[in-house]
Amino acid sequence: MKIILAESAGFCFGVKRATQLAFKAAEENCPICSLGPIIHSPQVVERLEKKGVKVVQKVEDIAAGTVIIRSHGITAGELADIHARNLTPVDATCPFVKKVQDYATLLCAEGYAVVLVGEKDHPEVQGIISYTGHAEVAVVANSEEAQHLPDQFKIGIVAQTTQSFENLRQVAEVCLKKSKEIRVFNTICDATTVRQEEARKIAKQADLMLVVGGFNSANTTRLAQICRALQAKTYHVEIADQIESEWFVGVKKVGITAGASTPRWIIDEVVERVGSFKD
Image 1 (cartoon, rainbow, N blue to C red):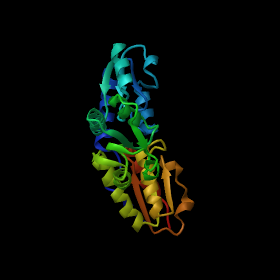
Image 2: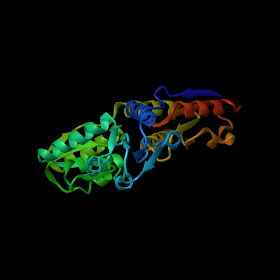
Image 3: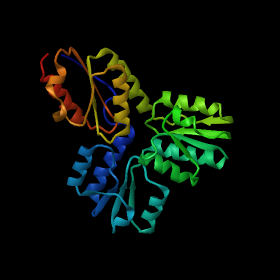
Image 4: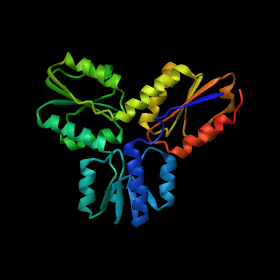
């Protein structure tokens, strides 16, 4: 079988930066924990745990020491609590996530009704909302949900960094009909766009697609959705051991891509396992 591996597969800039900061902090600090998983890769989180980095869900559960702020960011309230408890923060928030926080805050300050395109319960989205200090930020997952938004004189739009451009565009089109003035910041990370475009290209060529990454990873799940729309035989796996040989019967071309939180060693193991199968 021919294997087509996406050039963009694996860590993006923000995730690479976060993991480097986390492993470095683990070597230099004790006690140390992360507020939520540093990235959405259970395998990376497990390696950090072996280095002494415990995952904690609430600031009040941290007695003392160093706390790593995950790549998705945290809420303004959590950051204030960290400082109030005299904990030492290591800020691994992705710079692109911080940019969304800044734009959303700016739009609120300038009187726009803010629409955030994203997943309501995702930690990145919750963090963005908290920095605006505005409880009326509307989170919509798609254009269908945007149809239910009230008319506003001024609407400002930002997006979760891992959203697709097409989804952002569709929401903006709906909002144009609901407002006299609209301002849109395209806050989708370039790495996300590149991965999605490359995934579409490969899925059109392949007889089977493998999307590798955490099941809790929003950007990996979205890659799987994009590929599945073009290639029905699309499988989302976290590790090589989850791949079944039966999937490859009659398959000539296998496409492989991976989310922005997927470490290279897992991608290599997947490629090796696929390469061990024969048509």
